[in-house]
Image (cartoon, rainbow, N blue to C red; front, side, top):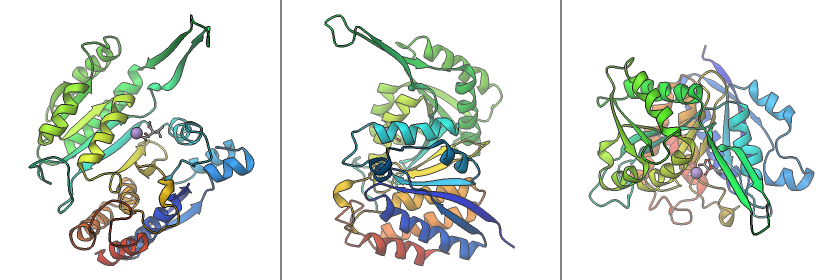
Length: 353
Ligand code: IPM
Ligand code: MN
């Protein structure tokens, strides 16, 4: 008897439902082959609900989500809703309320996928960014003085707690210890300028490293790290960083692995409920056209399987995606795949072993 998992599905806005349909299809097919079942519970959150009812994320929905084994998110962002509302009141609030303190973003170039980096291939681009997901500038601490006057002052505070930093770093050390042969962890910060925050991060990093003698450590300032990600991405195995720097460097990571059509991430609470999402936006102009690339959503599904302890099934989904990018599609970009959204989902499901 295989296991059964309850998964909340938030298709979200615009092209979200289209990619989610393919994601669910592939995961169901993986379940049939690998002997597990997923019960999907559709949750209506996003721009349409907000425009209809004024609700973003009711407390009752959060309680419902807490009881799930995982959350699968399509995309949020609606052309009729001012920017910031859905992002802050749904996506960020979910990360905070569910204490998903790790934002895990693999940067992996698959064979036959184009990268804008010259002379770099799958052997050189294969690392994971572990971004702190509940603190830093994202806590929304700060305020205005004399707003709207000539003397106005705006303060935006970056909050780092010892506990928050340590739990994130511990996760990164564990991951580096498990991953391949390199076992290398790079801390990405700005200790030369942001001297309070990065003093705390650096001390926690050095102290924790004593418990992980097998992991090789180094440190890079975020500006230099951006340069290395482009020039010598092969230097990296696991990168740990704070929320803001992580947000920025993961978009750089996404583009070197082939773009938003293939970049997936997990918002992970190792002791609670985690949420998996394609890291791109809702791509409004492709809504309903059957042209958006569902691979990022499908790979987010693979991350979810891995997180549920279904490593073999996760690998099978990843292998099937590699087949599709190697043989069947012309480009990862929406509208230029040479296949429809639905065909890409069918192809991945068809290659599953
Ligand atoms: C991301 C996104 C979000 C973030 C936005 C939409 C709030 O850019 O998941 O990286 O800044 O974390
Ligand atoms: Mn981002």
